[in-house]
Every structure is written in C-alpha cells, then in structure tokens.
Image (cartoon, rainbow, N blue to C red):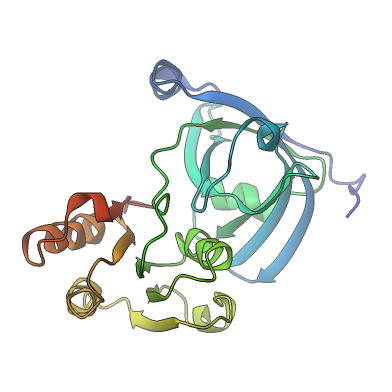
Length: 248
C-alpha cells in the first residue's frame, strides 16, 4: 500500500498530561508506530499493519499482548485506548492492529489511517493469561476483545476452548470469524443483558481446571468476574479479567 500524496501523512503525538505521567511512573515504555498497510474488512472493522519500532526484538509478545495508543483530541490532548497485537512477525518487526469501529476519536483516527501515518504508543502490560497452558479455555468477549480472543485461539491450537461473543452489529457473525480448529465451541449472544447469566451457566459446565478470560464492557466484566469467584468458587489465579471498554 502506498501513501496517497493528496492525503498527507499524520502523526498522533499528543500531550499526555496526568495519565502519561502515571504510566511513565509505573514503568511504561514509549514507542512510535508507523502504518504500512490497511485492510477494510467491513464497514465497522478495519485492520492496520504497523511497524513496531523494534518492540519485537526487545520483548516476548504473548497472546493478548496489547499496547496503549495515544490519539489526539481536537484540543491536542491525549486520548488513550488499548489494542491487541495480532499476528506479530518478529522477522519483519510488524503486527496487525484491529479496530472495531464506533463513534469516537480512536475509531475516527483508524477510519482515516493510511500508510506512513504514525502514532505514539506505550507498553504497560499485565500478566500473560495463558502462561501456563490451560487444559481448557473459556473466553467471553465482544467486538472490542475479539482480536485478543482470535489471536489466542490461533496461537494455542492445541487447547480446547469455549467462546461466547456478544453481538454489537448485525453482521458481526460474518465479520468477526474465529480460526477454524478442533476443540472449539462458539456461541453468539445478543446484546440484551443476558450475557452474564449465560456465561455463568456455561462456566459452571466447563471442565474442571478451566482458565477463564473475561473481556467485556466494564460493568458486565465486573459482574461476570464476581460471579465466577463467588458463585462458582473459581480461584482468582484462573481468571484473567480486563474491561476492554467503558460506556461514556
């Protein structure tokens, strides 16, 4: 993909304020990503291939590994969002970043991103949710966490998995496809408030010793995590829970 001379490249390098200072204090490491390719998957889903500024030569990128990208508000301030690195290629030093589009600054940037555009990013990750290969994996998410779920399934093809995805757009089932593999059970759930109840019922029937990955909007993430701990007595070390977005 070549840069369109009529659409000059952009650099998103905003003022980061208090958030930036805190992340730096917690050990965050900065880098600059450069867009080198773009795929229009669907009206509400875009993939960008980026150069990772040498990250893959310095760090081991495990499944669900993510970066904080810094988008620039009209006032020049920083607006951060986390995105999973998909299909990292150490030889090229690249990965794909996938955007489930909706109204907002981050999605607006992705809609207009072209080859040559650059954006600041910060590395500040938690623990690897699958560091010890689980006997069974139960993953509950939606369009925002789909990249992390799909990439984990691709990179752990030997692990049986149960996946529940909450539908955000009518065409999600056609657009957000999971890797074809053995040992995968997948179910779509409408965004009607039933997901937490359905997920707890599914978790209760999961094989003993399963590992749980919960990645939804903030409120259902908290509710499902609490249910796993209190109702099903799942040990905290077998739950990886992270809100992938929050309602404004």
